[in-house]
Image (cartoon, rainbow, N blue to C red; front, side):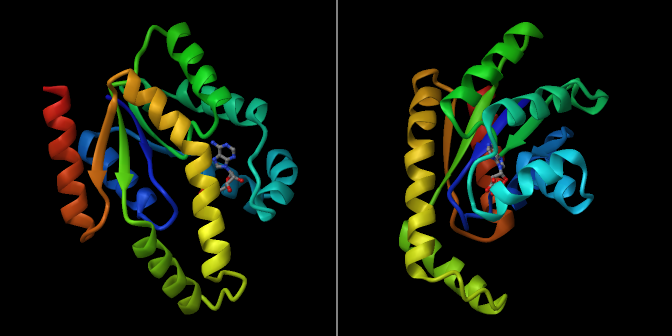
Length: 190
Ligand code: AMP
């Protein structure tokens, strides 16, 4: 099972990624988590990307692609994986295609969590308030959503044209959304 999961900020993508991966017995591989761990441990990679991450930018494709290609060769990824937060650019789509072609593998499906923007903005505002993050307001959150949509729409179109896209309503209780995802995937892959 080789899967991707995509979804806008606030939709609960990371939580769903972990649950879905556990359901299918495959690792959930989050590029954001890999980068954050490296920043925390002050590795050379962490030192290279910390500034970029703090500014909310994208880590360059060359670095990101190499990190993912390397991670996919680890033993736990031999039977499959779920990538969370990658690919994020068309260059990353190409790199993943090339890596899969090189190893004679293919993607099974791309999960796209969808939700109404106003609902997500409301959620993120509440979270920012609870966490005392006053740099997050409705405008910055909406801006982040726009950047996400601009970057991701072409990727979703690519995977839709390959008939890999599985769109799932991302609003609901964690278990409820997880159930929708596995039902949709099982139907798609049957
Ligand atoms: P995330 O937790 O997925 O939101 O990722 C946190 C941060 O890590 C992002 O804001 C980027 O700076 C970086 N990052 C994660 N995944 C990627 C990716 N596929 N390409 C470039 N940068 C990434």
